[in-house]
Length: 112
Length: 114
Image 1 (spheres, rainbow over the protein chains, first blue to last red):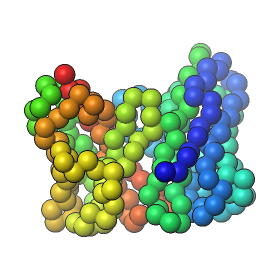
Image 2: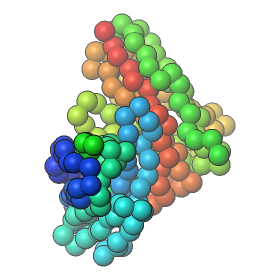
Image 3: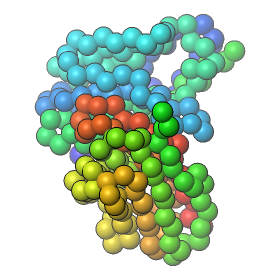
Image 4: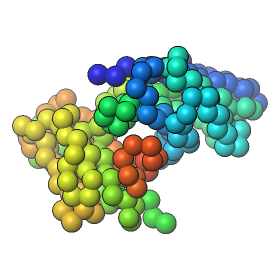
């Protein structure tokens, strides 16, 4: 069983604050790391697919970095808005099975 | 482009009753996934299909769960009989291929077993 940890479990910030959370995964046999955003009553939405050590990806105010050697990825949100409130999930897959293992998610609430 | 469609969105049943969930993936997506998400946990893969073939089903409790993807398009997941511990959100996702391709998720079915 692969261990994928996300921290913090939940986060409350004020509108305009920048924030970041962490996804930790096994550092061996890396294949891909996915980030998803899941808003309440909606479908999980893919944010990034990261495959190479040192990858940095950006979509609007959201960006992510990847360190496969030490087994972590950071997700950053710059200038948080209330519409960023959601659960952010990461999913790790190894070269052995390709089956994605999800973390428990970080629940972000942005207060106006 | 239509997204992944799931039905029903919510289902409440009594234990020992059967229940079925339906998923229609994005057109052209070969890979279809069924996940279960228990409260406070991340989604856990139950079964993965490549076209009509089930290629990963090691996490599917085969004594009571079954799934099919006839003709390699839509899929049905069934539980018979349901137990209290089956209460969860059941998510369906699809992708072009397994692995690095992003997955597109449906809205899920929230099952409550009383």
